[in-house]
Length: 426
Image: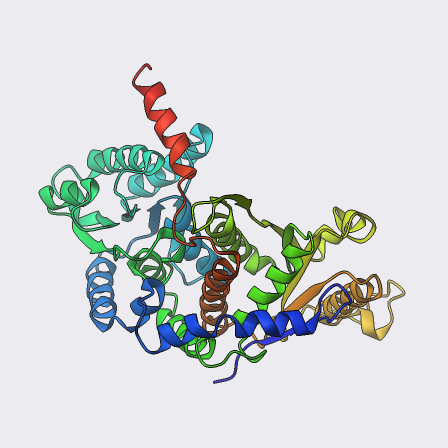
């Protein structure tokens, strides 16, 4: 198997010797993982054959109901990964997935209308509730709303159309157990934002007829590649070192500039992964450091006409990663009969798209604005699987260089605590 293409522009802002030095500093960590002296949950789960068998068994059971609508209720890491893959690979043949990932009243009401109309047409819906802790406020209120709606149309056997994905023995797990609702577990040592290759990410995709075996095949390949060497051929370690060197030089923004509408949700998934894993008040020694990179997502070519002026004329305070396809599955071409005074090179969407991307990269290079480029050979699950595993390894390595814990998010809990106080009248 070949990897997606990765390269970076060696601007004067990036000292290649410093990059290589930091890649090599990761060697003890890589050896510890490779020799199984350190267990990393999001890597270990790739080799869980029992999990994969349970996913296919349950998906096969639920497919007998032929759901016209699959409602995924979760937030953050519980839904962003599956949403990213669904948006990348959905087709006219895919069952429709709706991701209810906010408590916005108007949005939730609209999603309930979709569900109700489906039920009124005597079609089936499948509700997948995903919460690692089993206590996420937004997820639990949305779950109650949609289960109550389902009970109106299936008062006796509603439990057959619900699946709960959570840690074993969480409150929602116990609720599901009491009501004879099917359950899939999330390993205790895999956090939400790293859970794409657990049941939380894979089960909704399997129900939507996305090829999860190809996703996993790409992830397996990249996990092995990311543990092989401490040279620039290790692209996860290389990107971590690039971001670390840039951060030490005052670059506080990492922009993922995506040249494909279908991959924007993948950028949103990476945004959470980087932000929650790296944005920390304390380092691993307990010192106050307030470390963090601001992850942003841009869409080419749309955002060249909205923020391009700022990116090219404003402060040089961001590192950019361009993401694109080498080959697009479709390429509309202007007919030669439709003469808008276009030359031959302008008649194909893909040819113009690639030319614009190359033009942007050329301007970035001329202006000495640091960037990397990732090119997927084509639109396939293997390369997205590779990218997601690469991204998790990259962020994990970056956390090691920055000396922060990539798996906790203590500040997120603060708003939850205050919200509960308000709801309790305090």
